[in-house]
Image 1 (cartoon, rainbow, N blue to C red):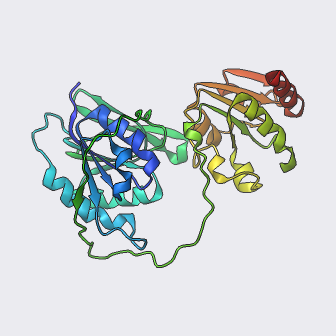
Image 2: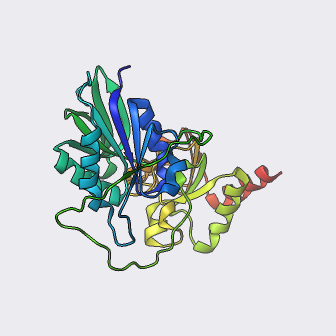
Image 3: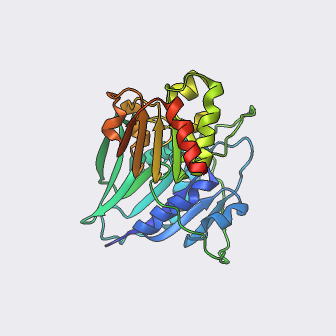
Length: 318
């Protein structure tokens, strides 16, 4: 398979470099990573070249580096690709990443695809699949510009395993300020969860079938017995506020790539299943035999979670 000459990886989150580099190595002949601090160099050891941006401060916004990145990319670009797309820029599909991608798209006059769940090179053409209409559908787009910009959803690529660190010294890149610079004047502390359900192998999800927050203990007990993480539907996270938003599975939450997803008391509305349908095996337990979740499930059990969950936990613990 022919590959794209140059692939760039940019992320405002250090833990996304591993999966973005996996995609870059799959599609690119030469992979360059852009980091914000030399301490992140070990996160990008699979790259062929590493560039570290200067001028970073607490006040800086990621979008301010668009002009800097454009100059860097254009100065190192090769124009001898046999493919329509000669340069691919992969970014993490975060709020800041999407904002930077939009600026890059304008400055480079290049196609931009947000929230890509997969990429493919077919007959020399680059295709990206992404969520549409709030996640209710998926679109597959052919990118026709020489430079393609794609923000990638978490879990789209299997992260590369760490290699022994090699001595690839980051190349410093001078900051080129934009015409209108955005600066952050103050920050408010925010509680940050270390949970990333998109990387979990097993997930137990809970929905409106749970009557009270105090009953969550039986869900945690089952998850512990299964060596699984706990997720939830949107009403549990954003309606009842019983769980952190990072545990919300759905169209505007986490997209699962798990081996097993055990859905408890979840009806299975499409907005939730956009996030849960990526699991290899879905097991559903719901007392409503007509719940939509059973249309997606590989295995289903009609039953009351208040009876089934404790019994299942006891079996797993013995």
